[in-house]
Structures are given as C-alpha cells and as structure tokens.
Amino acid sequence: MSARAAREQEQAQELIARLAKLHPKKIDLSLGRLERLLAKLGNPERNIPPVFHVAGTNGKGSTVAFLRGMLEAAGLGVHVYTSPNLVSFNERIRIARNGGGSIVSDAELADALSICEQANDGESITFFEITTAAAFLIFSRNPADVLLLEVGLGGRLDATNVIEKAAVTVITPVSIDHTEFLGMTIEEIAHEKAGILKQGVPAVVARQDPRALKVLERQAARVGTKLAVSGEQWSAHEEGGRLVYSDESGLLDLPHPRLIGRHQIENAGTAIAAVRFNRTFSVPQAAIEAGMTAVEWPARMQHLSTGRLQALLPDGAELWLDGGHNVAGGMAVAASLAELEERVPRPLVMIVGMLGTKDTDGFLACFSGLARHVFAVPVPAEIARTPQEVAAAAHEVGLSADPTASVEDALGRVAALKLETPPRVLITGSLYLAGAVLAANGTPPR
Picture 1: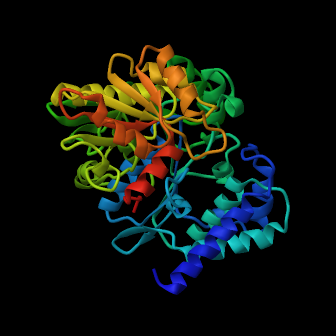
Picture 2 (picture 1 turned 135 degrees about the horizontal axis):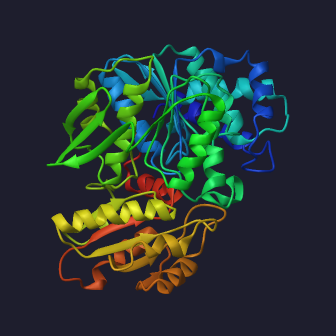
C-alpha cells in the first residue's frame, strides 16, 4: 500500500469511528433524522438509478448477489448497498464501473462521510443513518443503470426506506430475529418488512410462513400493489442438477446456482422473479443463466480452500464458513451440510461463536445429530456470548462441546479428536465472527 493510500484509509477509518459516537443507540429506527440530513445535502436519494429494494430476514444478501450477477451479465451498470460488512466498511458500497463494479475507495468514502458530517452539524443521528446518507451521495455522483438497495433492519423505518419509488420491491423469507427492535411475533416482524411496499411498484415475495404472508398481502392491498408470490405467481425448484424456474411468461431451464445449499434455489428464484416482474429492465435469458454461475457472496457456505486458517487443519480436512446466526439460518445451513454429507460423507466439527441477542439454543439444535463436536469461541463484538455459555448451550441440545480461546485454538484441536476420516469443519454463528475469520485467513471480500 502506498503512503497516500495508507493516509486515505486512515482518514476514512477515523471518520467512521467518530460518526459511530453521534447517537447513543446503535439502532434507533426512525426516518426523521435522515430526512433532515438528506435535505441539507440536496436530497441525493432523488438522483439515483432505479432501485431494486430488498428486505427480509434471511437471504437478502444472497438474493442481491444473484441480482448483481444477472444484471451485470446483461451489460447494466450496477450500484450495490448491503450491510453489515465482513472485513472493511467499504464493502457496503459497491459502485458501477466500466466492465463491472468495485468497492468504494477510501478517498471517495472519506470525502462523502466528511460532507455528511459537516452537513449534520453535530445533530443526533445513528451510524447507519449517516453512512446511508453518504452512500446515497456517492451513488448520486456516479452514473449507473440500477441500484440494488438492501434494507438494514426491518423495512418500514429503515434508513433505506427514504426512497420515494422503486423499480421493484423484494421480500425474502421472514422469520424471528431482532425481536428487540421488530417485535416478538412473526406477524409483527412481517409488518415491519412490508413497510417497503409502495403503490404501483411490483413486489416479489419469496416463500413465506403463512402468518407472514397474510400480513404482506394485507399491506399490499392497503398501499395498492400486487404481489408475485413464490409458489403462486412464480416457482423455482431443483431438477436433474439444474434450476427450473417458471412464471406466467414461461419456463426457464437454468444452470444450478454456484452458491451452495438448497435454500439458494429459492434465493435465486426470488432474484429471477425480481428481474422478470420489474417493468424497468428487460434481461435476456443468457444473462440470467450467466448470473447463476457468476454469483459470489462471501461467508454463505463458503469453502475456504486456501489461507492461513485452512493450513492449521489436518491434511485432507475441509474448512467452511457461514455467517448464519438465527434459527432459520441454522436450519438452512444444516440442510446444506446434510446435502454435502449425502454426496461426500465426512464427520462434521463446528466452531461456533454467537451474540448475546441470538437464540443460541435454537440455532445449535439445528445441528443435533449432524455435528460430532462443537468448539465454542469468542466473537469480536460487545454483546457476544462467552465460549463457556455457547458450550453450555450446545450441551443442552445434546451436542459434545468445549470452550476454546480462539478460532485458531479450535482449529489446532481438531486433530486431537481422532476422527476416522479428515473432517468437514464449519465456522458459524455470527457475521462478526465470519468477518474476523476472513481477515485472519487472508481472504477478505473483493
């Protein structure tokens, strides 16, 4: 890294650290503070490309990744806004460039954050709100054909919901998570997600719990829009090692998605439906096919075949990483592992770290009968469970478990398990943990 690049990175990181202190609450769902700041900035959110707005509990990031793969394959310039980041904050903002896209540079990020900080003038505002304002400012300055905008939390009062219109709204599966902010029931959470639905804007909905779907249908009727629902107006399933998608416009026989896991069939189908039901872009089948195999999304059943951490395992062992952290995510990861086990049997060892706000027992119960042993590790976050707490939760659901001091320590102890064949090792339980693993392994997102 050059001296100039190092200075730009340091400036960006200093700004990010300072902005994180502007509001006492990390999460405080509201639109008023951000609307005030955007007005001072000249409302950059009104000068952005057509938006694909994506909400949901699980599958948002994967669906956005599939969308990006298809739209870029169609030759469109694609901006992307996602959260949280894994290693570097810059990952949240991806800018369309000639021949593809790239993560925002430190210099451009620092400039936008500085402008937002000055315009905010010390007023109370959450970190996500002010960084979302910076993202809108960056997107408004760079030409593109489409913006893939992932909701941060909920939908109704999420900072991304300041946009007035969208090309299409998308709601991925809704399940129980973030109950302290969104509500204790699936109906309450679905109500928050439904807040992104807008009059006359096509809305694509992934397969849902019937209770959540009823809420989404009521809100769609209230605002005046039609839903395209998985299993009703469109469907996607695996057949003969391929993805078969169908809707009112016909049937597509596509390559199997590159992302691993049966749940990725539904995520890919949701993205295809968004492409086909929106009325702003027409995407050829060749681009949809290319998107299935070009897709990349780190820390979602990611096979770490190289790197410093992988080298700590016994010869022949596999290392996998997934940021799943709630019960629905645990069920999806467990199903993926069962699928891998059917194809290539290996003993499963898990390395798990979790936040204190998550249903640790429920998450770990998904792996009962699959995992031979669990190593519990700390997570680099303020409200993480201790390894001892995670190990105790594993014992409660019938799993063999030990607390360990670090991921490296856990990897070093795998050989002592004396398993009959080299194991499949999965690191999971937290996106914070996943980010630390990618950094330690020397394989950060690109």
